[in-house]
Image 1 (tube, helix red, strand yellow):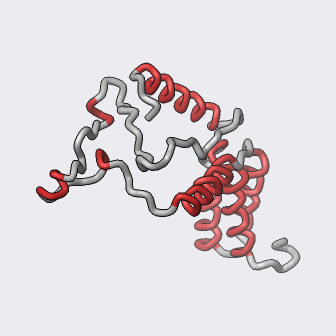
Image 2 (image 1 turned 180 degrees about the vertical axis):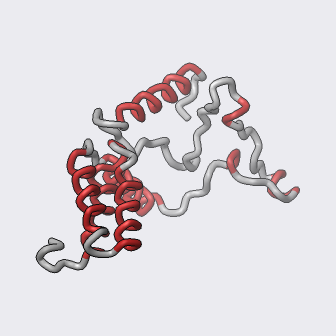
Length: 164
């Protein structure tokens, strides 16, 4: 593309999109690599900056791939369009005034760091909406670790008798 005369910034934009959309959290370093490449190219220009582009291409081409974040974001957007602007649960709303305190804002809020395992398990979805999981990580790259975290938090919720 570069040899054919394509604008290098277009190539860099596409590489950055690829890092986020097609690699995602399977390799969380893909996006910083793409941005570092773009920065290097902007600083050096052509022809020196083209080596940074080549390095980025090799990194992204060999990275594990996952579009789970992209799919989860799309699912969350669809849900937001269908549910509208639902009010968050009162326990996570600030209560800077006496009136807000009297309305129950902040009542029952559990600070994650106050629990022994750093996880309260509280539900942050609006009361009028079931808790959902939009992001479904896959068994590739770093998303394997994310799967473990999600499973651990689900285990803690069940142990506490909460579907929150």
